[in-house]
Image (cartoon, rainbow, N blue to C red; front, side):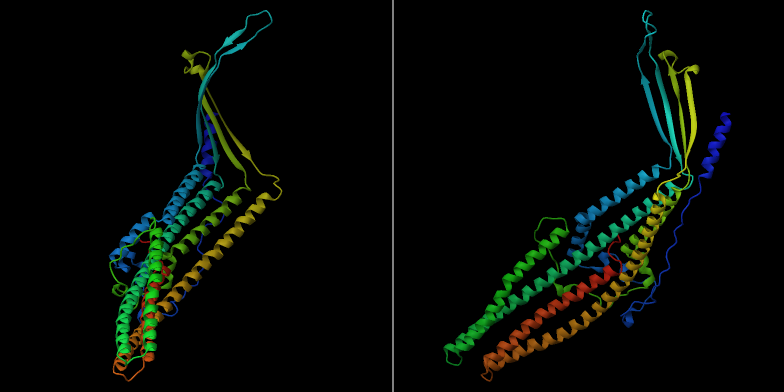
Length: 464
């Protein structure tokens, strides 16, 4: 009889290998052959994309590399994402444990007094018992294995989410650093312009004293000088606040930020390879995270379907029981029991069917979000490509404009010194030159910010 029971148990364990519910298959995705707005030298080439490069290969500034390295370790968003990965790992361990038997050990001892009659002497006994108990919910329909599959996919989604956070932090630090260098450049331009306008004011005052200039010329020259002087306190404020932005990204308290190069000295490539669009699906962390959420939603359908079928549980107990400690572990004191139970839902008021419909709808939502994330990724890359290329064109034209404006200022000053032009001409040309230099600095910044955005859109930055 005992052998027959074990044969039944082994048969049930063997048959518990099936799993209800759909197996995951990636949805059909329509990917373009090439990104929109590609320049001729950016044509798609397999295995060649800016997004495959590591962040220290893209950003060559040593100070920027040090800042990014610190941010990847100390940024609070990155650290929170790491804790979420640990939580997902723990949830996976909890879920996976349901597939295995639960075994517990116990021991008990008691002194018992049992009266036999009103006049008879009571009976005393000291029963003692030790044993093991086993409970095993057989995963006959794959309910727990599907739940483990969903938990494992959720863990992978969380890990890709952590990579997405790292990628965003790398892009944020690089962008903030370039913005700080641009403010430094504006400060240099304003300080140089202020000194030049002070020298010009002294010349105008000398001419006015000598009778070859007017008080109006002096006032207009003072206007130019005060305009340049007023820009400096505002730039100092913006520089300090930008340093605070970077400090917080690094997980520091607000403070000064070192920089080794000027904005003009940071290298930037004339064009960057975008790679083939299909590779974006494997590189972008947000797409990978969305797909793993879809895998988890698909597995939960199997969990919901398994609830319709009978649940089979095995129970067993084994141990020793005796009233004397010396004979507790002797042969006659041994005891054991084994059993199996089956529970089949009969009437649940539509709860199980509604739960199945819920999981199926959640899967469809996950499919739509996955497809949406892919389309958004293609848009991000296309937008970044055109922004990068057009910002380069704008910067080139702005550089020509600045050269012309600076030369016009030199000529206007020479004409004014020679007495063939009014100071109004100097005022206009000097203002245009100053504005042109500031706009050139902003154009150089925009070009670098576009590179950072393109690198992020292509899925770069999380590689270690």
